[in-house]
Structure formats: structure tokens, C-alpha cells
Length: 137
Ligand SMILES: [Fe+2]
Image 1 (cartoon, rainbow, N blue to C red):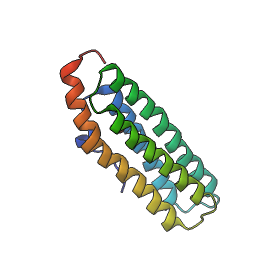
Image 2: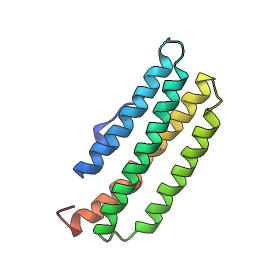
Image 3: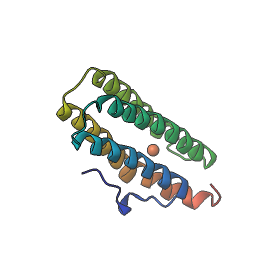
């Protein structure tokens, strides 16, 4: 089950609340996948699109914060964001014709697992460094 956990907090309020929104969208998608309603595929596709749009918005914000803080690993972090967005693009394109719930669920879980892993390894590391540099970002 997709669920936001406190251990995902990296200690930066703006970034933490945006990460939480990503989990909420993914959670809503998962709930829709498990419910019995007919005609839900359009709503699922809309949610997946929203997940991608919000991810893009969030990455931009995070990148701005890293730039302001002159984060030392900015470009490698940016590359990870870009790679994930292009993967999300492919997934959404692929799922557009996909009616198999298992396939959709697997892609959703893959996406949220990537985000969780990125938060725990890459974003946390970044937050540690920028915390020591600037206090007001
Ligand atoms: Fe990030």
C-alpha cells in the first residue's frame, strides 16, 4: 500500500510538503485502482498525468533551491530528475492503451518507489549539505 512515512522527511518544509503531495496523488490512484467502479480508466490516466505534472513542478522548485544554495552536486541531481521525467513520459504513453490493472499498478508502484528511493538517498543528502550553507531557503 502506498503511504507517506515520516522517515521521508528531509527537513526542508517546502520540499517535504511537495513530496507529501506526490504520495497523496499516488495513493489516490492506488485507491481508484482497487475500487470496483466502472469507467475509472480516464480518472486513473488523469491522476497519472497529474503525478507527472506535479513531479515536474516539484523538480523545478527543488532545482531552484539547489541553485540558490550553490549545491555542489546540482548537475548530477538534475540529470536524475530529467531521467525520471522521461521514464514517466514513456510510462504514461504506454499506459494510455493499457486496461490491465496489474500493469497499471506495477507502473504506479515503480514510480512511487523511485520517488521514495530518491528522497531517502539523493534528496536527504542534498538537504544535509544545503542546511549548512544557507538558512533562508
Ligand atoms: Fe530530487
